[in-house]
Length: 309
Image 1 (cartoon, rainbow, N blue to C red):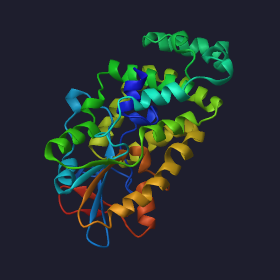
Image 2 (image 1 turned 90 degrees about the vertical axis):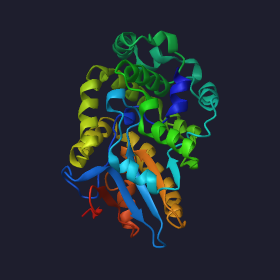
Image 3 (image 1 turned 45 degrees about the horizontal axis):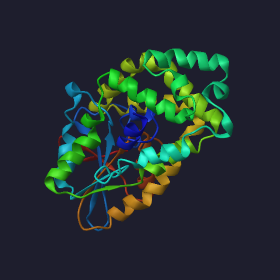
């Protein structure tokens, strides 16, 4: 189960549900917004559409905002965090086998300590995964597995998510699909975290299991109406709980992706780039980084595009 989950998505588990983006300086919902998609215009005429993704959705809320149709129609290719068209089914499983076992002969019980293990195990058992059954796995891998179980319980499915919907459409239309990084690179970020940070990540994951449904409802509603202020607060609140994650999971990856996005702007046609919310928000987000390079994003709306302040 862990391998299948990571193959489909990868990345930070909590970020799977922090699912919208902040326009530069925008503070309220845009009544005329067509959805969380921005256009970045290159000096040579090419456009990159930069979209905030919901990685998992339920059937009742799977219809994408119209901005995605607008951008997809214009784009000649689709670029996502990972290339979902060329995923190796064994890649995540191989990474887990090689990297996700606790080193030094320890286990989750000794790593977390008796009291923290007992609290985490009680929540994990409620989701159907006793921690003793995965005691040799590192905390980050267990956190991802538990998140997958909770999302499935809530009826949320990566097959209904933004990336999978767009990837299916691109395959049917013959549009090429590419990725900004590999599954191994995504998982490697989590695997490189020190054990104390991984333990805290797992602890927060199980502690928030009971409130995830209400949190998701708020996030999905704000995402659909492009309420960037609400989404920014929800997103940054998560990172305040574990601030040591922000740089490796957000800032460093954004800076690695920025040259790739700039290169797309030198082409003679348009591209749709789809990434998670955490990669667009704030002073280190892709929207701000592009604006600082003289490439200000414009929010797609139901009329002419409006440049954000």
